[in-house]
Image (cartoon, rainbow, N blue to C red; front, side, top):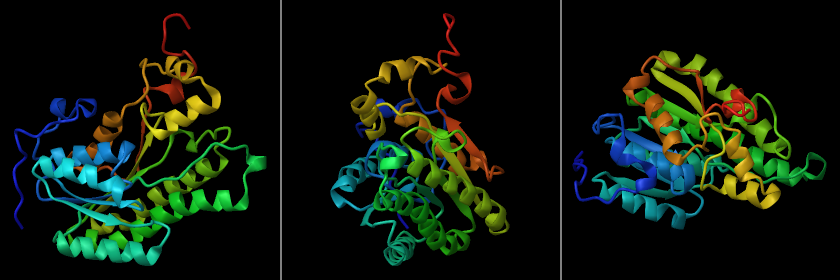
Length: 284
């Protein structure tokens, strides 16, 4: 299998901080990663960070148009990128995509379950269909991908699964009953699979981002409550997370740097979930 070197003339997105990585550029050389929802937002950042450190990518999402631009960026870094339309709610389609991608890429070593669905709503106004839609994407979809990836990961000598959760899986959050319940299920699934699949050399971990600047979640918060600045002021480190912050955490857990870590839940929120409102500022 031929892999090209990272191109020195590739234009790097400055917002992703790829040129200031603390990791060596060949950290993931020879590895293939599947990222669901890998073409936009946090998923795009994760995909580009994995590619910039040597991985070839399989990008999966319901909308091919969301994937092609990210695939082009990955190829500009000298890595291979497959684009595969896939609805994580469809177990048969998931199984087909994972099987065919692992065959074409000659292996599968990393899986990042990033695909998500969410919207803000009061619990008493949440319809059964609305509840079902979020749970099927977040929880059921994560299970379908993990289950389909088990054999390729095992046959590649083991690997790493990183599931994206959220900081409110332990606390709950207003207007997020459907998302919080689904993500809490993902966290339990993460730990259950870590316990079960470790004997196959498969590590399973989770990353819990706080509110990430520039993403759909941040936009919805502004539109709904108009308090983004207030929220940011309550982060002890003084700013919201950026896609690069989440991507670095995923890269760490997916790489040999995290070789003996499994069942972990790594929170990336600048201390917001433990610092309390204005907890990290001198004028609190």
